[in-house]
Structure formats: C-alpha cells, structure tokens
Image 1: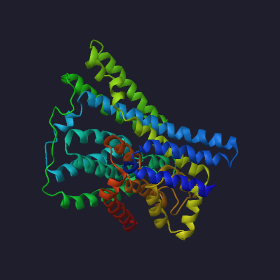
Image 2: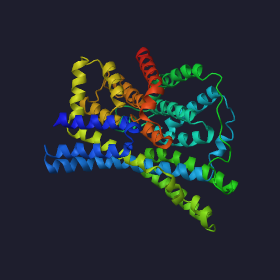
Image 3: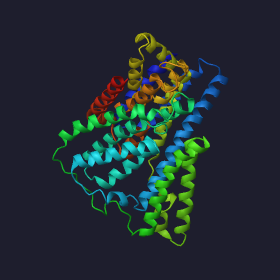
Length: 425
C-alpha cells in the first residue's frame, strides 16, 4: 500500500512540475492526486478510521483555505480602491538592486508580524503595480517568497509551523533572539548574490493607469480602505494571541468589517462603479485554481501522514543520521520543499517529547532549529510553502522556471542561515 501511495504522489508531483509541458492546470493534477491517494488507502484500512482521519485533515485544510480566501479578498478589495498607490507612489526608484533590497526588507519584517502567507499575498499584489516587465516581475516574486519564509521563521506567529511549536509549548518568544540572525542571513546571502547579477539594470515601471479601473476613486475612500485593510491584516495575529482561536476566524472577521464598510460608503453608487468596488468584484478577481491546488496538495500530504509514511520517514532519518539533530533538521528542511512542512513538524513533535533540560527542553536547540529549517526549507521549491503556492497562483510562476531561477538562491540562503545557527550554538 505504502509503495502504491508514494508512487501516485510522486507521479502527481511530476505532472505538477511539468504543468506547462503537458498543458494541464496543476490544480486539476493536485485534486486527482489527493483523491487517489485516499482511495488507495481506503482499501487497506477501516472505513471508520478513514472517516476520522479525513475529518481531522479537513479541519486543518479548511482553516488554511479560509485564511487564504479571506486574505486574498481583502488584498483585492484594497487593490480595487487603488489603496496600494499609497505605497507604490512613495517607492520611486527604478534601480533593480535598490528595489529588490527595499521590498525584501519590507517583506521580511512584515512576515514576522502578519505571517508569511498574508505578506506574500500583499507583496504579490504590490509587485504588479511596481514592475511591468514579465521576467522581472517573476524574478522579484520568487525573491519575495524567500524573504517571506525567512521572515516568518523567527517569529512565533510568522509561520504555521512556528505557531504549532509556540502553541505546543516547545518554543516561547525567546525564539526571536535565537533565530532572527540566521533568518537575516538566509535573506541577505541571496540578495548579495543577486545584487551583482542585477547591477545597472533598470526596472520597467508600469504606467499609473495600467490596469486601473475606468473611473477615479475618491481619495478618502482609497485611504480609508488601505488603512482598514492594513489594520484588518494586523488584527489577525492579535486576535490569535488574545482569543487563542484559529487565525482564519480573525481574517474572516476583518473581511466582514471591510465588507460592511464598502457596502455603506458605496450604497449610493450604481452599475459598474459599485460592482468593481464591492466584495463581489474583488471575489471575481481571485484565482480559484490556487485555492483548489492548495486543497489537492494538502489532501495528498494528509494521506501520507495518516498512513504513517511520514512517521516512518522520521524514524528512518533518526537511524540514517545517528541521532545528529543538526543533520535531521536540515534534511527536514529539504523535505519541506517537497512535502508540506506542517505534518513534518507535527511528526517531529510526536517523535520527541519536551524535556526539562538539554536540546529538547523548551527553547532547546532542536525546536529552534526545527522552526528555522521547516520555515525556510520550503523556499527551495515554489510549492514547498504556503507563501510560494500563493505567489505562484497570483503571478503564474512556473514550477520549472522557479527551479532554474530561484532554487539556487534559496539553497545558498537556507544553508548559510543553517550554518550561522550552528556556529552561534
């Protein structure tokens, strides 16, 4: 059974990678792969057990999908009111290197506060307002994925895996001082490398009216939606910290507030202007295939977790690396680029118990390094992280293109940050 499920998963992954060659949307392949792996599993397990496992995974998947859906709607709503002009009008440089550093630093610190998925969605929307050339746009999008994942790794609320470790009691707020320097190195090393490659290149900025709506947005409405959008996104981690409820509820609450406000300020408008400035208009611009791709991939990975394949993999790592915690975590980071980092971290949390002292104590070396590796290792492939999948869907980044242009940058950043942490230890 395990071999059959792994084979289906591998073939599905290969078809996703070759999306542009076979000309089948990756979302369709992901859905087929996810359902097939569970269909195979059902012939070898009790139906009651399968139902329980599916319900368990559906809750986790639903939380991510609703979070993604809410965040994308808020971003599109702000964009429809030209709210991002408040930022883009202030970023006037056309120097590629300067722009890359500015956006990367913004992304890095925003990810620690908002989380890397939300930040990636926001930055993908911003890039379209700053860069006209398609190749440059894709490259900047790839680098933003690296910065978002690096920024999310050092904050307790910056990435879903650090949230898991924080809620589980493996790490505390002290993870900030332990991981921030390796995370900075993870972002800076690729930027330094790219700075030489992009030296002297000028960014082709889009015309201010490119893609703009056919009517002028009232400045008050533009500023109001921008401020409410930013506050709504910032409210999500606060909501999570105060209520201990899942982040998607905070995101949906923020969306509800913005929805209500737009209904009130546009109640006297009619026709096209009202539709394009409404949530209905924002929803029409969201790429639904990204949502279904998330759903399919997470279903497939969930089957690997429920069948025990991931736990077996964790035990194999323990034997192969003779219990060397540095090597185990670094390899988990590489696996995060292929498999979802959530079940990998969950598997590690299940394998090792929190101890009173040593590497497995609260804020111990193993847990801190796990947060870094699982958070940043996913950058190696475009579908290795939630941020990567979101940007991939918004900017239409090709899997193979990402490997050719971004994977090497992600690799040198990931390994440099890992080495930095080991040296600091």
